[in-house]
Image (tube, rainbow, N blue to C red; front, side, top):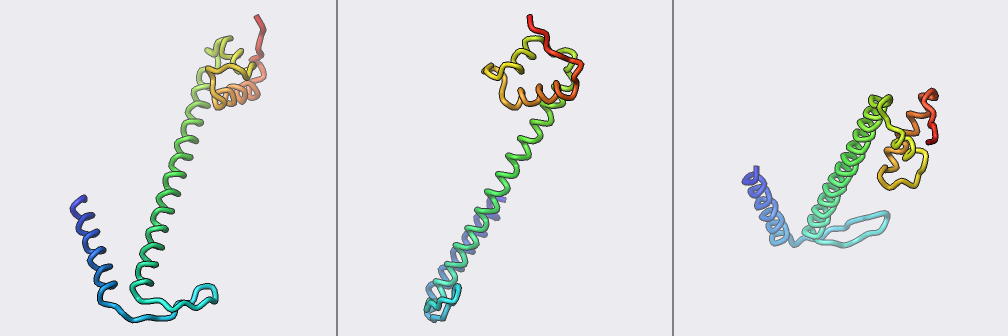
Length: 128
């Protein structure tokens, strides 16, 4: 795979150099109604930059969606863990859910515990 990538990069560089060295013609480029007189190599490299920006944008989109997917999966696992262990939840855990100042539990864990408490009203917190 790495060798194929290197070969592809070399071919693209050689093609870009060939276009920039051998083409001396100029043409008219119209962007949003504005005319520009540009050379063919300039148009080629503008297209290459646009393509690279598109690839970077797609990569960033993929990374962002992957992170969101991992976060949602983790939240589902935490909720399942809380609902599975509902009878075994200790009073200390309930105290942590009722006092939002505890540093040991994260906001996600508190939200999952509070959601479980709303779903199961039989379990009420008894102060010590």
